[in-house]
Length: 62
Image (cartoon, rainbow, N blue to C red; front, side):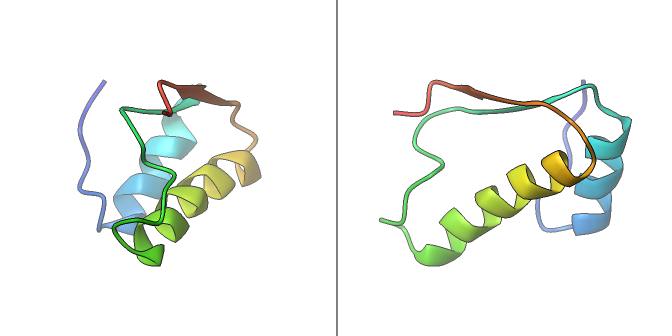
């Protein structure tokens, strides 16, 4: 497991491509209280994972 800069979409793409699955978690990532951009970003990452054929697991999304 490694960390990647979330603003470098090429890094995110490569990480997802090389992964077995995406775990989306860590609190309320899927919300629009802090702005619509945050919601669209995380939905975009999920969509990218699905387009790459990776399963997506949601954990602790409260």
